[in-house]
Image (cartoon, rainbow over all chains, first blue to last red; front, side, top):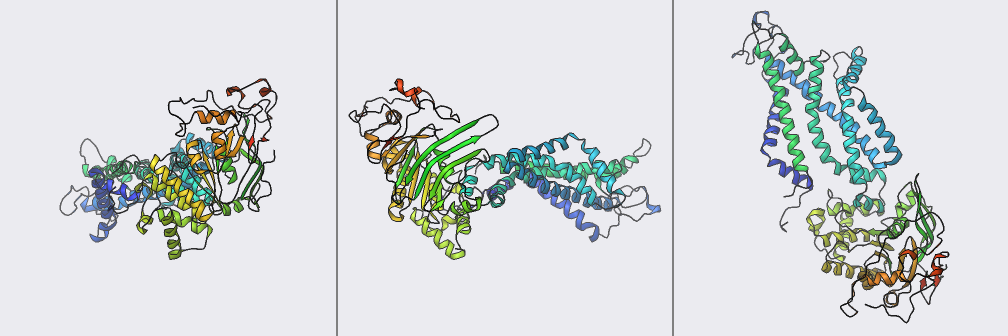
Length: 290
Length: 336
């Protein structure tokens, strides 16, 4: 440590390490590009994912329709981009729900320990034992009448299934941090439980949560795609497009672009997220120095 | 059982302190009937092996014994305030304010994600109304006193400081509110010898400039000899000997103290003597009155009477207490 080094927080140092990881940087850039395209391009290029053109059915990719058109003559580029909005939104929102629930639950269990911990974690074990797909389908069906086309049930269903692992991870971390001397030190400086939890314990768990959150987004996206694939999706998403694409694959004539584009976007997004997640995990590893 | 100097103005007065840990399987009495005083500006050493109840005693003073298993009885008075049985919120106002503590490992007692300035500011936020520039001025004043000059250190993170620096920061944090009592739990164990000497010097000057009382917990008699006015020796959760430092070092009365001294390297005695470790381990502590001296199984001077009831803590001269029926005689000097 040179005396002239600018003082950096452990988090800033981790970000520096992340910036040196080429795969993670490439993943992050690709992710940004896909997200920006999904959000901005449909409006900028005046793309319309819903209008059908009976005259323009099943066109191969060409200059008018870069990604071709589907069996109803809708522009595939428009559908892939708009579908991406749903997939990304579900991924982020459901992850946010599960982080919110999982972190608070795990933190309380780990911080208070003993009987509180025992009871709270047994509930988690119980929920773990239930088949999650069954749960998700149940929640979706419960909302299907009242909130048709609404995405909130999807967020909730997926988030409420995913928080369990987050709760376990956070609980384990908090349990070890709880007995670190700086937590005891804060306690004997007269800080209250809430203050210790928010100011001293949770910031130290943040790294793990960020890493796990990043890796959770792709798994949620896959789950949502799977639901859409099963016909339980609520809106146009990559999963639904893949499902549609597979439906028209047949030995006589394959409209490959209907399957290829949504799959390619889905794969690229998942891969980037995994690269970023792995990079973050390496960067936030407390044993890694420099 | 009544220690001498009753009636003088003590700063900390511990009487008949018992800490028991109650679990489903068993109950352990970690501290049993401990009484001692710390006077203003006095440095009292609390020594003993690991597991003798030193740290449990100090945490009980702060009301931070392991909960809900830990049960504290007896009396701990800080000035006029009774701490045993005080509410959590009352104790919170005392911790960090009237009583502070510093630990063995200065790195793990600082939050790695907060700048030094932020951690110091937290103490001021909790206990004073100093904010903003006045808070910064106070922090700089304290840092200066513990030998960390320069405002740029406030922006440093713990990992950017050396071990000695970190311990200084911990001490600064403990001193921000000008505590009446500083509990130091082996503050020099993790530091190398030069830094150790500096930290001891710092603690010594504190006591002189601010009249801070220090309860110094250690198993290192060498360090205790340098700093403490009086020493309380604990074994198996009870006090076995208490004496002014010089007397304790030169004429230990309890065989345990003698054994501790023999296992410590000394520079004030001729070279060439072998260090003798104490054989065995401290006993498990049952939740009942002992039927024999707790040290008897390991004691080289054990005799018949030692296993017939626990010896009482008796006065052995001014400021001296011992719990032994066959004390080391005053005539014997501790051989090297």
